[in-house]
Image (cartoon, rainbow, N blue to C red; front, side, top):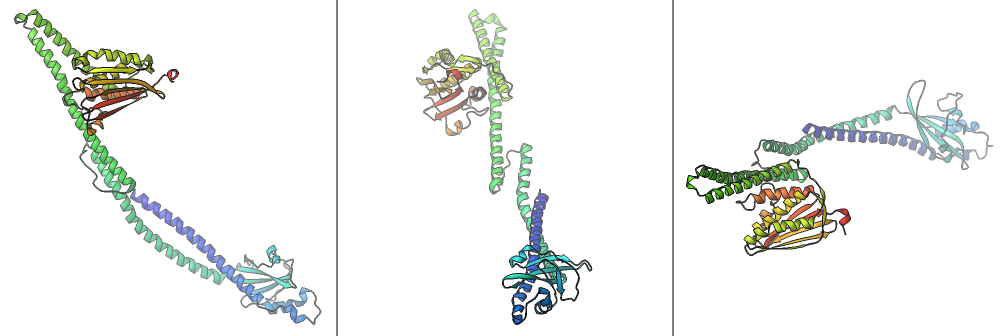
Length: 460
């Protein structure tokens, strides 16, 4: 990664310097070319019109004044040619008179000075040709063509470009050294984070990133630390859960084993005691089967292997049936249940929704105080059926509430049902396209809110 960062920096700086040198070379060339053209233009403008010298003369054609024009406008170290408006060569300061016609840019006839870079065919020498209009009474009567060698100019430009390249090379070296430090400052935190993730992958979740990093790196480090904290919490909960369930499984097994051993010697037992023992074996077996079934359900939901048999059902009737089913348990604890509901139809798995209702209402009874009250409200809101189960029991602390839906978490360390049951309940509700929320105040009670999508033709 460090190499890539340095490579990208160098590519960017080299492309930037190349662009700068290209623009610099182009601007430098234009600057010198325009300087040469401007010099010739200033030279021409500084000369008094030769036509004034011939006021007493009878003006003839341009050829009649070619010698005077060449002599008056000639510039040292440059060849001067006099051209007609058609571009025909009339006379040259070099003394050569060849029958030749040049292409003249139309801008010359709008009183502009035009220059071109040309190559002399005979020698291959690069020259600049400057075309300046020759004026008489506001009219262009001819064209002055100055020819100057570019050898010295190109030498100057090349030297300046070389200096520019040397400066750019120095800049590139400085940038390279800076990029080394910069890349190291970028890569070093990544190396530490990668090393930390390797430690986490080996199960060393107690490791933490203590350095403070800016921006996204800081968010990444905080996320990894948070993930490690959550894994430690979940691992601890999982360990506690396994310990609790081991105890829960051992209790009915101990009872069953004890009564089996007792019944094996029935001579000291009355018929009533034998029947009581068989009932206890049956009860403990049912309890054991319930625990195993809950574990299997939890495993299926966690691995997403559960299938829903969804049909259209009257949810309000199901809520009423479950309420009646648990009325006896509530009366045993002197807890009253008040149910208010409207007609609600859902597309859902009846058995799974019964399991949700049983678990939520059973928890409400379990954690209610004696002589307490449970309020059940079922109503419609927007496109959802809303089920609220409220009790005035012991409630939960904020730190407990934040983890109540986590797998393996139990509010009551003596009860397995809360940790396993709510995790299963959450999965069932989620798979039906709904959501569940637990609101609680410690010492005042708890409210569980379940929202489930209605059958479309039942939406008001």
